[in-house]
Image 1 (tube, rainbow, N blue to C red):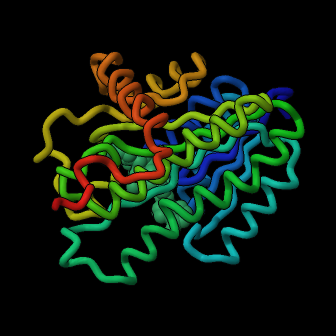
Image 2: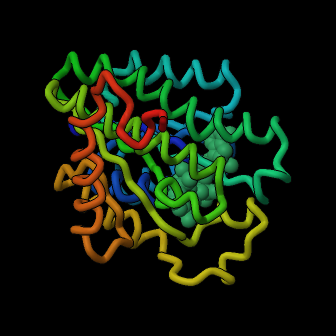
Length: 262
Ligand code: NAP
């Protein structure tokens, strides 16, 4: 067993989550892997145990199933060895809003929003009590870009970004680090599941490079890490203009432009 904090990673059977598992194992952290595909996680776990010597637990879970999710919440709440939570599991549903069913949307929200919020809620009190710990949330640049027309997915990722920023405000003073990671297109199976040929996209990042960059942001304790963005001052300016509005919201009267005309 490692003396370092164990890392629980959702969506660890493939893609970004499986690379996070690899990288944290190489840093000497024990792991708890969460996803639906047990066989894939077992084979990843065996490789990582053999190559790095860390302990790896596999929790087969459908995070859209309330009872399954509750079991993982309980593990996060009660297992004091877990000091890092990586909320990575996520999906993209095909098509535009007009073609999506209410059930598909609800399932997407259950995975991309509800599971992230509930697992963060399970981890935060224990981490805050300990005065340490980290929550890493996989958002997306799509959450900054309604123009892309990937509306519900983007809305879930805007939630994840806001949740991360808000949790940082609440938890940083208690010693807990919260990071939002915003990848752009990254070469994983997520595109196949959404019926999109990843080779039809331009500027697709290799998944190993994405996670290694995100971990540089993690080590720097960045609140928001956008690996593909060349010029960080663009994000800083965007965030600064949002913050500049805040002191202006408390008004007893509507703004001049909303005053009734005579
Ligand atoms: P991926 O290759 O499709 O992997 C998704 C992971 O989530 C898999 O391990 C999958 O495992 C798990 N998962 C899916 N549904 C689940 C469920 N109901 N319960 C439990 N686990 C479930 O996707 P990825 O590209 O690595 O994406 C990881 C995260 O990065 C997501 O949050 C995604 O939105 C975000 N992201 C990705 C990109 C990109 O271009 N790839 C860009 C921006 C943001 P099982 O099938 O075994 O359950």
